[in-house]
Image (cartoon, rainbow, N blue to C red; front, side, top):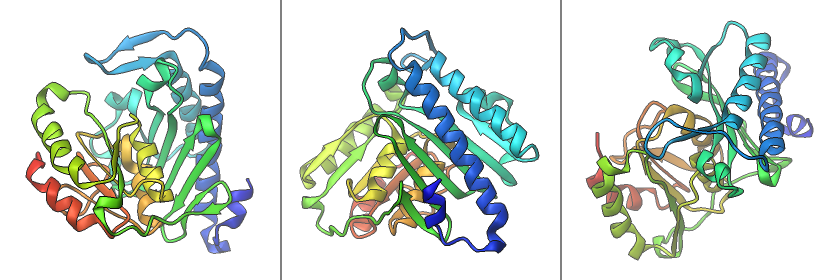
Length: 278
């Protein structure tokens, strides 16, 4: 891949480069599967009242798992559709964290806003983050200490410092009936203060948009590790800031996130603090 040539990885980073290539291969292969199946009638199963899984989620996951088990057999894997098989202790070492189809509801409805999200983590922190925005053929990559890229373009977060001029995004958790009050409360608080608010339905892409400067900030409750592990690194390596609602350090195993360009972080996070569920 041309993008890998743009990363300033030294020969001493041979293992990291290998993992990055494997991760990119998996994200691209899975994206090809999703693209091929996108216009077919979908086999939809409910995991919850509004939480879907399709045959495409499973086919994408199968391709990724097969590749990782072949190329990195000693690395643990946490993937959304097979998370029940994951040991509680596995994420403390080296681990792939995978969402084979972020934006399943969008995908099932033919709404072209979905992605494959893959992160390589060590001790719960992402070292590599990869988000394949399949409909737009945009591959986002971040490597700890080496920046964030989209295809061959280096990315930086926006430089907007006034919340009133910011475009923000949020998301709605699948258990919205239990979290309706804090979700609506946060929207009522933030919406009058910003230029616009979007809810597109794929957290990995929301984070990629913050990293690229297209969005200035994003927040959401009750996310899972596979929703944010790759995207949080995209934001951080592009110069942004990520925390929980209270301003404490964020990890993919934290269930609430605020991600911004850094310049508006304090103001946005303080407004969201009262809606923290931690």
